[in-house]
Image (cartoon, rainbow over all chains, first blue to last red; front, side, top):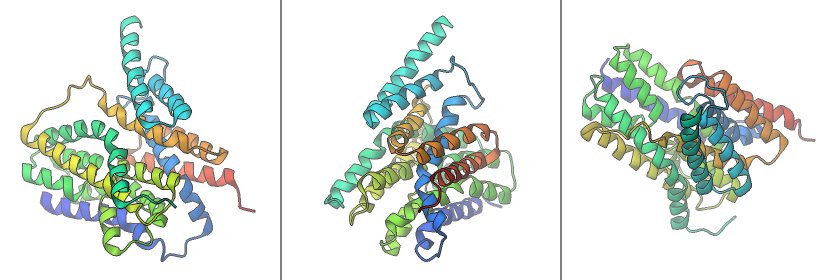
Length: 108
Length: 230
């Protein structure tokens, strides 16, 4: 199968997946719990993306106080909670990551 | 309801995703640089960025094609890796239900992880309005443009950000900044905690199926904690 065919079918399926509920939800008679569940989609999906990025920074599990990504993620969560500010959260998280990487590399 | 104009919404969308670009551009460069080593022509590699337009799926597809995997298998893998977008589609759908077909097609094409994250946050904070979809469009178009340019730079010029620059960390930080303020009740907090823990435990499952499973477990947790509406 040529790469172009793979790409067109794979891209077509991806597009249809993205279009699926946007095109159909208002026509479907979905049960009530389905509609109530939608409110949890963003916090659930994004948390499931975030946590492994902190605990598995290099693709393997690193659950330790020596993991700078995990420590910096903790700092970012605190800053996000207190300030609700995206830029401050990113700056604090990146600064914390660099500081922790330096300290852990130097002293531990 | 708010009275923002189309232009204001559009620029707010651009500004909303702007921080994420810093993390995505190195990813695009890396994709471009890697794909060249996998028997895919530069033209096809670049076309993939607009036809599939999904970073992780493109990475995996490029690697599978490079190792001579059968086309049908690659198609299945791309489909499975991108299944999470159905969740985004369901989550966004109530907010765009009154738009015409053209808008729905266009916004669906632009529905990536990043565009979804900032757009759903905007809908949850500011509510629906007649111009809100321009925020979605601004965010999606900005990501699309930067993805095309960064993959082109990687493919045609090459080059890589030094791996010691931890720019990839910007994506989880941005998502933290979006999720944490959205946690307003016990059901939401528990949905997030359980989804995160499940994502961690299921991390080893192939092709992002762990992410999908974790999201479902988190949503179910939220529903159970919230209980039946009285």
